[in-house]
Length: 317
Image (cartoon, rainbow, N blue to C red; front, side, top):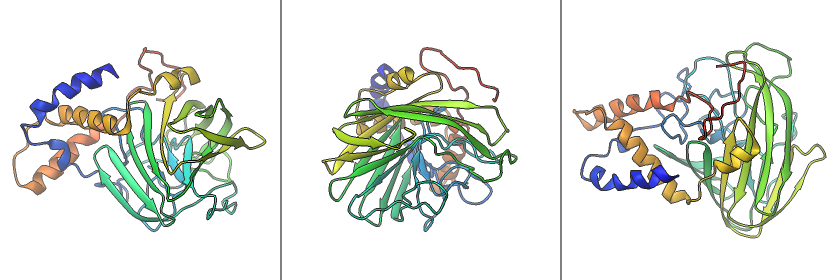
């Protein structure tokens, strides 16, 4: 993103002042009825990648020891209503010690966390099998850095969403409509998912995605072309997942050309610009609370619009 380099020029100025973003604790409000999203997010960003600990948590995340089904790219934050989004799930795993669990009613690879780390724009989790996942994000693209203890694999599920229920058309529960994915080459998997209902009981919406890997892979899909299993010959893999509500082509265009660390720096500069508009004085604890409260309105995604202004009309806000 061209603006990212412009923001980088501001870093010299910002480094001479107290960094407001360091006072933000993303976990505040995430437990209990607050249901805020604790994962990475750009100010007003469309993409909010984070762990889905089952399908019932409103914003996907739940405290340990809840198992993680994987990391989806879209979440709401603090709605107070039913579940929404949780689309396009990816789950790192090891062929040598992971097996599919069908007890939920669909294929899944639930994994247990032994540790996790939160800061504004960054999330990290380590599984009990040694896999570490780091996440940051651009406005329309998730950034992942997977550290495997050996050659790793990645499960991609285009059918996943939050609020699954066996009762059809249950109030504020999402319902599956359609999904499809395809392995484009040995670096890309693209597709879409369509879901309806959920918080606000909205009509069908479609999320298009393009997953791009830094390392070549071999992959296979299920018979319905809705899930994929990707196998790497490396132990360190960077993955970007571009998202669009318009088309796969737009999702691919929404993938920036820079790397994980550069995007994390750009994200924090963008947050610093937002948070530094309000000067906060007081004790470190008061600054932490006020900075966190100042960040919450910016977690809202106001429009599912691509950079060129395209916006597909949906029958929901």
